[in-house]
Image 1 (cartoon, rainbow, N blue to C red):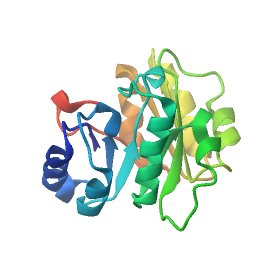
Image 2: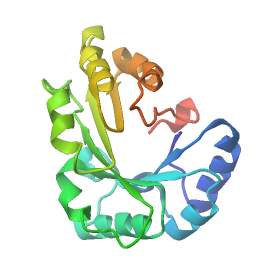
Image 3: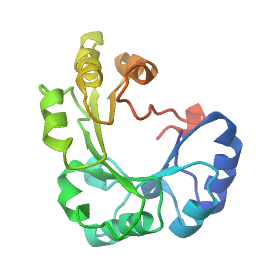
Image 4: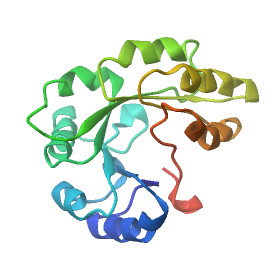
Length: 193
């Protein structure tokens, strides 16, 4: 489930409610009014992906990039399962080892179309992170084919999907492919992230 609760307490309540039906939750820190990363990681009943999307990626974080990266560093250092970082910021997190079990998801989104070479984008990232996440926008049913080809041909952990109505099937079919780490869904239609 992908969550964007108002605050830490609300997020933990929603995680407790969903825990019997999910194996992992993405928490969109950029869409929360307030949050306590340490408490979220310590109290969550399921492993967490923590992300903080900037406005340039259609996220809700409006502050300076150094502050945003500090939030992600805190998530990493507190040992959440994954942090989701934009592919163009991957080099900034490359040296964050320090014994943390946190793995890095490198994500790239195309909000207006499906990119011409999704598999090439995957190949550029696959050796630089634990999981590659590539998301394009499907304008037609044919636009889902590059996503399905990516999921079929991936040799390392991957998250691939198509946004938009025609892309819904990629969220449903993704778990059928062996390298797929997860698929996303909103807890309720009003909670879509």
